[in-house]
Image (cartoon, rainbow, N blue to C red):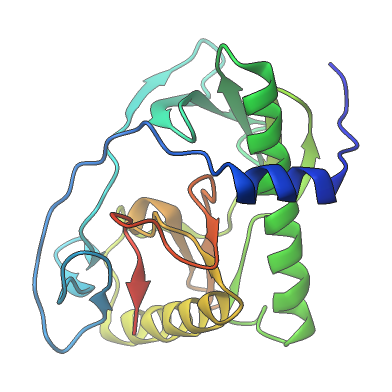
Amino acid sequence: MILIQPNVELVYFILTTFPMKSLGKRNHTHRHNKDALTQGGTKKDRPYEQHNNGLHAPGITVTTKKETSDGSKKTNTYKNDGCQVTITNLASGKVIQKMFISFCLFSRRLHIIWVVKIMKFLSSRIDEFNLSQYFVLPKVLLYTDDFILFERAEGLRLDSVELGHIEYSLAVKALKKAIKFINSIKVYHNDLNLTNLFWDPEKKLLTIIDWDELTLNSPRPKSNHWKK
């Protein structure tokens, strides 16, 4: 496979002039709690709330999972500018491979370059403002024209863990800081839900994954966009 050394200015011009639209569909579950965080977008008062499974939020993307012969797990979902995505655990789960499959090689390359460059930019800004004690993005280890390799997010995915009152408060605090900072520099995740949030109870650290739906300057009209 060919490692990409992109012309960032050209890519940015193309993507901002001819923005790609996601062809995927999302399933939404709506819950309400006026004392919690509220979600922006087309409807108001879509909060996080403490539930039987910990933090709960609407807009969860339903995916399919299956075990592979080597014991790793693969997740297939259609979104990411029309690409089919396969997620595989490698190196005993320490590395995540995100494989993008589409008929258009050029579109796939642009999508991968776009996501990686913005993620690296965000990570550098988070470090610059000393916010990495509250939240981080997964580290990009390698990318090609077909896939991205990430370090696995530390902690537990928030749709699979029940948090106590103290842990819940700390997780919400970290999420508020993350949303406020990221949106202040005009970057929008557009798919914030519990499947994309990991909480490390030892480090008290939030990791935000799956940035394939990100946009600059404004969120997508029907995005799962969260605000204070």
